[in-house]
Length: 198
Length: 233
Image 1 (cartoon, rainbow over the protein chains, first blue to last red):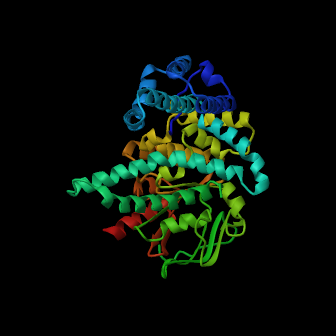
Image 2 (cartoon, chains in turn red, cyan; image 1 turned 90 degrees about the vertical axis):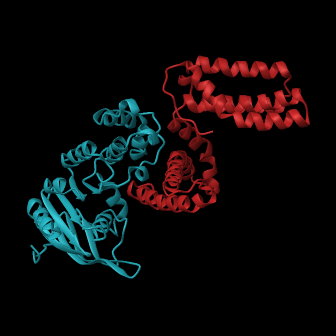
Image 3 (cartoon, rainbow over the protein chains, first blue to last red; image 1 turned 60 degrees about the horizontal axis):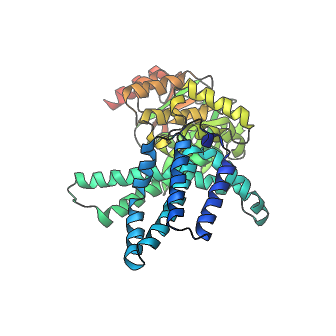
């Protein structure tokens, strides 16, 4: 999930990025390793809701996050409901939704720069194996920046095709999108050079 | 104005016999020029060699023959130092903005410096350009004018000695184009401005007219712009 920071001064916002990342990892591990019952999943979802409230995020933010997960819930929950039963469907889907909502909360309350700093520190020991932490973190940040740009290109390609009478772009949209994206990648490479990153 | 004898000795920007080839075509042909004006407009038709000239100054393009020197430094031999001294503003700010939010993108320009200093300078730059309330917004959600303002701010925050702007107002509406133009021309750094906006070009101290990879005119901006207008009629 690519989310972006919502400024705030809540306890959750003020907590260090490293602490929040650690808490997310622990929560994900616990939810994955321990087998909660139906009430346990309900409690974990209630806990996540409480954390969103503690972060003083408007309820519509939480609602938007849940709406974003609708297909995951429908596909995963539906499949489990049909093939395994209602209880495992509730538990497994609830477990995934809880973890994704926690991950979203992390990115909603933490500046990307702070997360990247933590990541850089975590990767630093890998330097002895030839991994450059700066390159890794730069790549992640650049990817996050470029996702909406490429999505914008896709939308422009669709509009251009509709304007020329194509009802559905389908696969025909892939080639112009790739061409635009690769051209943009060349420009970004120039910008990286001009800004002294390479 | 054709026939102006360029002087390449001890100028801020000097090109000596520069030729650039692309796919067998001469994009720039034996260009020699010396420029020391505070602001220099670079004008000419599409494909005349303007952008290639601009890119030579930051080492984004290397000449196939000849030398390029900026503020006494050979661009090819001193790439790292040149990139430190020269700020490049691209036509499309979306390519130049590398980080997810304005605050992070400005901080990227100052990477390696103490955190407190970075925070202070970023806050000051955001305030100076009216972007404080957009500091943590997704960069993709900024308006076209705000994106170009951010791209320019990401250059200005490094305090460059030379700013090279390649058609920075082409994608902007009139109000934003004027704002970016005013901002560029108010800088104490030397400015090289590639543009199709002849009003903006005429406000520079000097201008350089390219035609088919060669310098067609060089001189006081108003004269060169008038010459270009006549040539286009």
